[in-house]
Image (tube, rainbow, N blue to C red; front, side):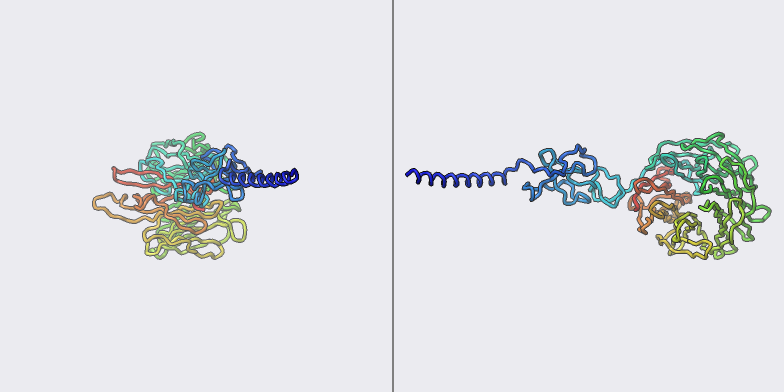
Length: 505
């Protein structure tokens, strides 16, 4: 008897153990106490809900861990698509943060990376800002900008009182304004440029002498990195020229040790472009000499650029008797303004104003490149000419809208050539001052060749005929910045400087 009882007791004990195991297994599959932590996962690294990064991303529960997935997140576009709530501090996030959305998420988008980081359906949104009102619409040749420590300087002339100076940070946010006063005897200022010299920033400007009415002076003013004059704001006189329509430009050498100044001269019917070299203090290194001469009716709009080999590239616009007889003339001059090689003459359409840049050469190093617009017509285009002194021919970069293509902006960035231009249309309004009967759109082309309409809204921008300029700069984080002017008569005449921060990878 005892042996039978022992046998039944052993059998009963084995059955009891099996039942207990089954009950325990069922309970664990329906009532999780939390996910088992992976040895390589941080459940909570103290990441703030509004920051990016994956340091605080937790295991949201997987089939392998036996934990059900979290519910879908609130945001479903961009980098948030398909995101589910992460397990953080023993519970699923009530409101999804970067822990759920992943390392590319940003509560407020700041990156230029081709992603919709804040999941609002807009990728890399552009930002338009009204910077400052202007008293008058400055011409393109009296507006300029320059990178400085911590940001950018901009100068423009919108009154006879002086030259306006604006300071921006590295994101093109306005930090301050000031004015460089001018002697009342000099009015108006027709040219204003910013240069980077070996002594720091410098301002070059050309002004008519009001007391004589027929003498133009070119002056150089040293500035600090904040745009304030070092020494007299009147600067140093570089040249004087008897003319009523001064047109002059300046450029520093790549090392900043020399400054080339060129200007158009019309003396006793002889049409010339003259030039000189000075050091950053304005001391004459090479006195004025003739660089171009012409028997054509017009020889004007000289330009100059410092090249990597220490030479200077000088261009002039030479117009013949008809609009079909128009040339851009190009010459190279060394550090002593001596001619290097042969002159190049490039036939272009009337109004094809050139822009000069140094760009990487396909053979290595850098080479001077000329960009220019082919203006009014049914098929306006923007062209590039490489190998300027080796027979290079124009190559079309892009066609533009059917209207006048304004003077383009261009800059060479760490990622390649960036362009911006305004297609300006003529919109006559009876009784309205002729300068205001224009409107247009802002366009840009990235190094990859993508053309984008950056106009802020579906309607064209109201413009003034002087607003044919766009200043461009590369900003940190692959962003681009542009400065331009709009103008309107409603309310009464108003001119406004705008900035645009945009992404063009």
